[in-house]
Amino acid sequence: MSLRSRIATPDEGGPAREDGHLVAVYRAKLLEEIDLAEMSSLAAAERRVRLERVLGHIISREGPVLSTAERSQLIRRVVDEALGLGVLEPLLADASITEIMVNGPDSIFVERSGRVEQLPLRFASNEQLMQTIERIVSTVNRRVDESNPMVDARLPTGERVNVIIPPLALTGPTLTIRRFPRAYTLPELIGLGSLDEQTLMLLAAFVRARFNVIVSGGTGSGKTTLLNALSGLIPAHERIITIEDSAELQLQQEHVIRLESRPPNVEGKGQITIRDLVRNSLRMRPDRIIVGEVRGGETLDMLQAMSTGHDGSLATVHANSAEDALMRLQTLGSMSEVQIPFEALKDQINSAVDVVVQLSRHADGSRKVTEVALLVSHGREQFRVTPVTRFVPRPVGPDRVVRGHFEHLPLPRPVAEKLYVANEPLPPAFGVAEAIDVLDTRQAIG
Image (cartoon, rainbow, N blue to C red; front, side, top):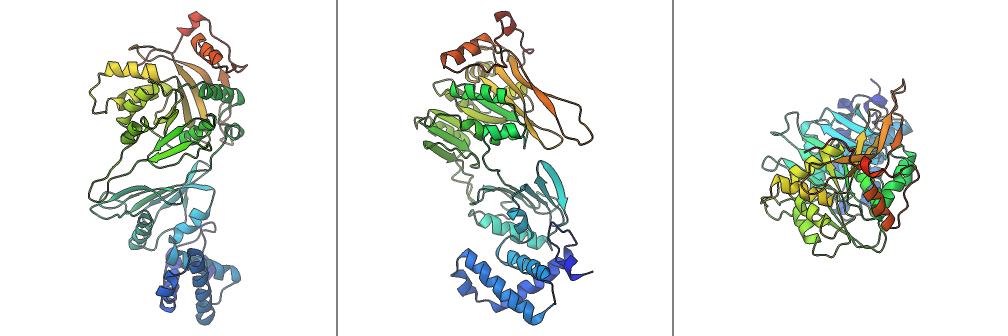
């Protein structure tokens, strides 16, 4: 086996066991020649340059004979191992990768363009993977061990990291790093096929007219991306408070207060939940509240805020359809310590929620708005929704690309009148339903 194959980079492929041995040998030689006290006084960039220079001298002095490309690859791998995250460093440097999934030392997957693929990479050992994990969590002042086998945190560079180790993870230490894409504008989402121009015009009118919007979808369907784009339509003079588990939203307005929950410390104290933040935000004179994701008892507080003067708020929820989103809000609201009857929760939801925007990730990795639905039920009625936009897919061809068109349906007259009062024009593709048609909604649920 050639030396070049033994120091193969991720995009070139090749076995990693011998690569790991070679890197370990030169890493040990490097540590023998550097002054750790001197290194600690240098900035990160200077530290890397110094290590690369010293390692270059070692390779020139002791061999082996390498081509320029092979030499550069080996130096990068050894320095990555000494300073950074080893085999993960080139993955973190690859902007096309949105998620890194390490399922034990021998199995590394990444997501690119919505598709998951396994890479021909592996850690040299379980211990090396644990060292990498410990290096990651130490940057956020957390620790991971048998007494604390799970960590969920946001890195200083913005990525979200989740760690779970044995005995909970049976295949070995498991690491998931999720990189959040840059903020997309709504016109850019049109270019990606996530929605069409008429749907954009309608959603823009809803946000400016202070409709309460729930963005619903499964994991990785683009909820945060759409929520971020919709938030760009909020007028610049309004006071916006964002509440998230891990700060992902990137609002461009000036008057924005970003709040982030906090997990308990190693003694199990100091936790600040999303619910605590929602309650506190109501005392901060918000014009709009944006909740990154509701997943528990904070749902009730959010619904009460939406229906008591904080119109125009936005939130996301995990659900597979607009109807499921409403049922899930009802279930999550019942998880509050406030004992509120299930029927009363219907009243809260019917009063608070105006629009549900449903997103889906399709087989080709694309993310699309599959439905925009209006909640038209009142009081303690069963939930009734009427769709005003649908994505209608065509049969998938040999290229496996999902194509289709967006269907636009008439708006209920009360909704059209609310837009008119707010001085928001009705997009041309949407008509206004006759009064009798308003009752012709999807079958009641709940």
